[in-house]
Amino acid sequence: MPQVEARVRVAVDPATAFAVSQTTGPTRLRWDPFIRRQHFLDGATTAGRGVRTFTRSRHGLSMISRYVSYAPPAPDRDTGNVGMTMESGPWFFETFGGGWRFVPDGEGGTVATWKYTFSCRPAWARPVLERIGSWLLGRDIRRRIAGFARGCGDPEVLAEARSGH
Image (cartoon, rainbow, N blue to C red; front, side, top):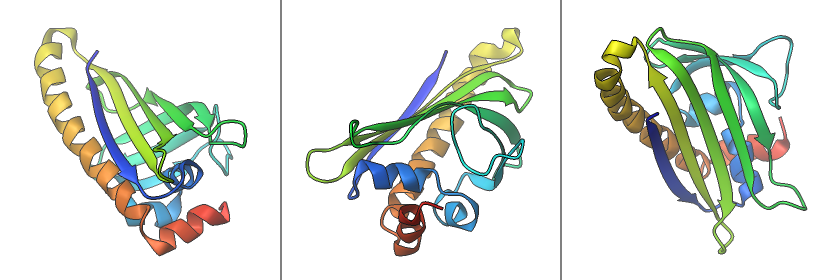
């Protein structure tokens, strides 16, 4: 399965970086160039393992995904990670999953690493579709993590992330 990855160093601690990555609503739209619309499903009001979300991308494509892991940094663990898997989405994805990891950089900041893993259908077109998908998703993940880095320097985004909303 193809995998695309992007990495960035941000000048905030892992707990703050994780919190920025999990912002929602207008705050999320301030930094995330990929999302046009996103909300929790099934009555959920916050992210967590098992929670489902609806996302419409700037491309107009929609996906329903589920958090399969959700581990913010904690007093006994200075790293954080979140993982999601697609339940339904664009017809050309057979599978799609994403993982975001937040690790201290040793200087008070964080190294954020984001990965997407996917497979395409139909099987006969997979080699071509996955090459195209790697290029497109690679471009999108680099733009998205660059937006995240800008969000980690945006006072409004940081205030919302640190408030715990």
